[in-house]
Length: 163
Image (tube, rainbow, N blue to C red; front, side, top):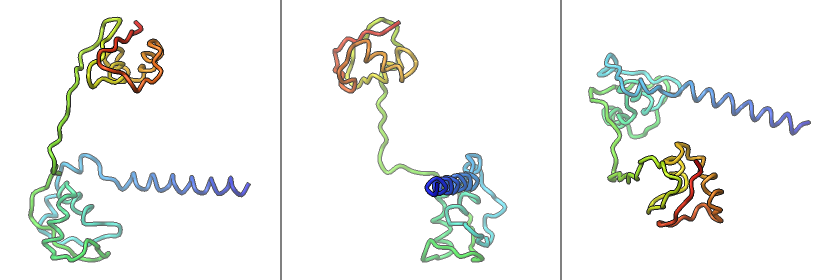
């Protein structure tokens, strides 16, 4: 009985924290707009604010936290409640990639035949999506072809598709 009460208390705490975190998250609209009225002015730090959250609210991008830190010559990212910081006049920053992102497009044509010949890079999931429009139907393909290990298919294998 004590164990059950303990579980209920822990679950209650997790649920409260979940909804508390959801309420404090910024909406996608807030990320694309800036609060022009605050730029160039002094901001008084409130409870729970960070350089990132202030930058999100003012510039629409948390990545401007470095500009706020530099403009105020802060030695630490830590802020204290009641601390006054200047919000510099800078444009909103966007995230950047340090490495080139390469995506490999596979053949996305729908499969309409009763059989399919596996090509390099195929998986049962991708084949099921192309054949049935539902990746979870890979199990049906594996069962129909009596595959011992559905994770192993080779280019050139001919798979029977149920229609």
